[in-house]
Structure formats: C-alpha cells, structure tokens
Amino acid sequence: MKKSDFGVVIMAAGKGTRLKSKRPKVLHEIGGQALLLHVIAAAKTIVPAQKVYCVIGHEADRVKSAVEHTGVGFVLQAEQRGTGHALQIVKAWFAVNGGDVPENLMVLSGDVPLIRTETLKQLVEIHSQEKAAMTILTAIPENALGYGRVLRAKEGSIEVKAIIEQKDLAPEQLHVREINSGIYCFATKALFAQLDSLSDKNANKEFYLTDAASLLVAGGERVVAVAAESADEVLGANTIAEMMHLDAAVRAATARRLMADGVTIFRPETCVIDTQVEVGVDTVIEPYVQLLGATKIGEDCRVRSYSVVQNSAIANGVLVRNSCVLDEAKVGVGAMIGPYAHLRPGSEIGEGAHVGNFVETKKTRMGRGSKANHLSYLGDAEIGAGVNIGAGAITCNYDGMHKHTTKIGDGVFVGSDATLVAPLTIGEGAYIAAGSCITEDVPDGALALGRSRQTTKPGWVKKRGDRA
Ligand code: UD1
Ligand code: CA
Image (tube, rainbow, N blue to C red; front, top):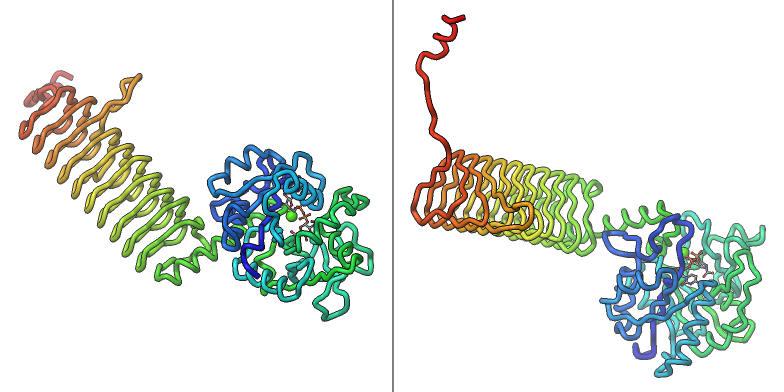
C-alpha cells in the first residue's frame, strides 16, 4: 500500500478532566515537549504534515498556536461528545473541504505520546496485509484499569468482535487484559459508513469510536488487532501521575540515546534532560544536572552537578562547574564557567574565557580568553579579548529609565570593585584602578582612577588610647 493512501487524524480536542488542570491535556509536557508535539512528530514519520489532521476543541486557539509551526491541519470539534463524535466531525469536514479523502485513516490519540514510528509502520503493514476495515493496536499492560478492552473473535484469533470501555465492562469481562491503545487504522469508506450508527447510550454518554469495531463486524467487515511489542509505548496520560510516569520514561530514553552516542551520564535517573537536547561524544554529565529545551553541548565537556542549562549552545571542551544557570547563552571552545555563575539571555562567552563564582552576565559578549572570575555583574557589555575583570567589578547598565552599553577594548584591566557607569567606552589596553567609579570614556592605554585619595594618620591609634 502506498503511503499516499493514508491520512492521519490526531484526536486532541478533549479537556482532560481527570488532570484537574487549567492547561489543556495535550499541552502538558513530557520530556520538555507538549504531548501533542510528540504525537505529531510520530505522525509525520508516516505521512507528510499536510496529511495530518488534528482534531482540536477545548481551548482550540491555544492548542493550535502551540503546534501550528509543525505544518499540520486542524479540524474544529467545538463540542466534545466523544472520540466517535470527533471522527464524525472529520467526516463532515472532508465533505465540506472536498479534496482527496485518503483511502485509509490512521487515528492517533493526542494523549498517547510514546508511540514509536516502527510500531506505526507495522500497524500500516498489517492493516493492508489483512485488508481490514479496522486494525487496532493493542497491548497487555501490568495494569489494564481505565482502558477499553479488546474482545477477540476467538482466543488466539487476529480478529476482533468488540471493544468495551472500562466503565461498560460486564463482570465476566473484567478479567480481559488486552487493552485498546486508542491507535487504529481504518479503511475510510467503511468507517465513514458506520459513524452515523454510533450511539451515546453508555456510561459516559459519549459517542465512542471504539464502538466502530462491533458495528463494522456486524456489517460484515474485517476488524483485526495487533499487539504492540511493549505496553510502555501505548500508555496514556489521563492523570498527572500517569503524565509524570511517561515523563520519566521519555527522559530515560533520551539519556539512553545520548549514552549510546558516547556521552557519559552519571546517575542518569537524577538528571532532567529534554528530548531535543544534543550532546557530543566524551562529554560528562554529572548527577542532578538539567539540560533543557534546544540545548546543544559539544564534545569533551563536563557539566558538574546542579547546573541548569536551558536553550543554550556550549562548544567543545567547556567546563561548567557546579550550580550554574545558563539561559539562552553561548559558550565558546574551552571556556570555564562557575561554580555559581548565571549566564542570562544574550550572553556570549568567548573561546577560553572564564566566568567564575557569583558572576552574572546578560546581553554581554566576552572575547577570547577574557576573565571575570569573581562576584561581577556584566550587563549590556561588549568586552574584547584578553580582558581581566577584577573581583566585584560591575557595569551600571541601567539609569532607572534606559539600558546603556559598556564597551571594553582588548587587553583592558579592570581593577577590583570598579563601578563602570554606562554608556561608557574603555579603550584598548587601558587600566581601571581598583575601587574606581568610572563615568567618562577612557582612551586606549590610559590609567583611569576614580576614587578619593587615602589619608593615613601615623600613630593615631596610640594617641587615641592616651587621651582615653
Ligand atoms: C480511549 C479509548 C479507550 C482506550 C484509551 C487508550 C474511547 C471511547 N476509548 O479512552 O478504549 O483504551 O483511549 O488511551 O475512544 N478526544 C477528542 N474529542 C472528544 C473526546 C476525546 O478529540 O470528544 C480526544 C482526547 O483529547 C484524547 C483522545 O481523544 O486525546 C482520547 O480521549 P480520552 O477521553 O482520553 O479517552 P480514554 O478515556 O482515554
Ligand atoms: Ca486517554
């Protein structure tokens, strides 16, 4: 069967009442990414984005804007009256929007995010081999509670006679352990022919897509089921606890992927690593590190414990010592950061540069080999190469109304506790005396002092004692 014969429908209109959350269920995140984005990524391995149709409804605008960038299409199910109703809406949408109705529809659930592309491909294959009207992906999890159960035509048969929802199970059906994953392939025509016959006379008063199984069988169509290799990939997320279980599974898989590519992760179960994160070979990640968002880390780096790195790019051979926070920062080859450094958005730390203890940078470029080793605030600064920023030196970038830039040329030496009041330019190779408050530009090669002279009174202590 050609791929062009398929479209993929993702059901994502539900509220997720069991989560008790204000956020729509499909926008809850696992592995740092919304559930729906995981499912869309899986769908796009089967068909191109234009053939993926997301059924949205509850907070439709919010869901749409969160996933629009993937290029998928949207079908609005304004009132959510069940998974069967969702497909009724899709049918009506195709009738209005015309165009090519795909010969087959794969249906995915927006809240079943761990599904692997291999499994979906296998489902497509069996669906076409069996010439089925409906092919159901099933599993046998440890705990079947809450899932719909799949009743085979006979024991060991590939054929199915019905799917019964948990709440509608008869006492003698409670022992059935094979569950419906909520993932199916349908022959579109056969499915659409039955949709009007769905009824909402059930425990939830909803139109169940699962009832299509028995309706199709009654109509003489072939309904088959195939079990996923592992139940883990079809686990649903109906409660926060289930969501966190899936989150742990996604993160464990990410850590395994990185380790398989030559990254050392000590105690990976203590690390929080988002799905998109990339790390180069021979980099070492210590326990309790968080690598978030689109973070990229090069080769031969070390990220020490308790550091949190988000949406940042770290080049090769970088050392991030303990307890650093990096957010939208770039760090050059061989740089050393921390411990306890805070690189805020727009920080660009040059090759071989050092940013030490309790140093905060924001929108600041630091050139090659420059150092700010202790207790500094560097905001809105352009710092050249080979610059030394002494302990406690700060840029005063904000006058209460506006932000201003501090430019520091190559080879400048800024003494300890200097206060650099922006806007300010310090020329190449200049020296700023320790303890200075600098308010005027300093030319190349100059020494600038901005402090009162010291007075020393010899013998003052003894004289005071004598007076007393
Ligand atoms: C569903 C299946 C159940 C299966 C389970 C697997 C039905 C009736 N039951 O149950 O057999 O074991 O998934 O996880 O299908 N949705 C809509 N519109 C609606 C209702 C739901 O788009 O009107 C979406 C939801 O957002 C969700 C998906 O469909 O992403 C499944 O709905 P949900 O209510 O979670 O179904 P389950 O009770 O989990
Ligand atoms: Ca569900």
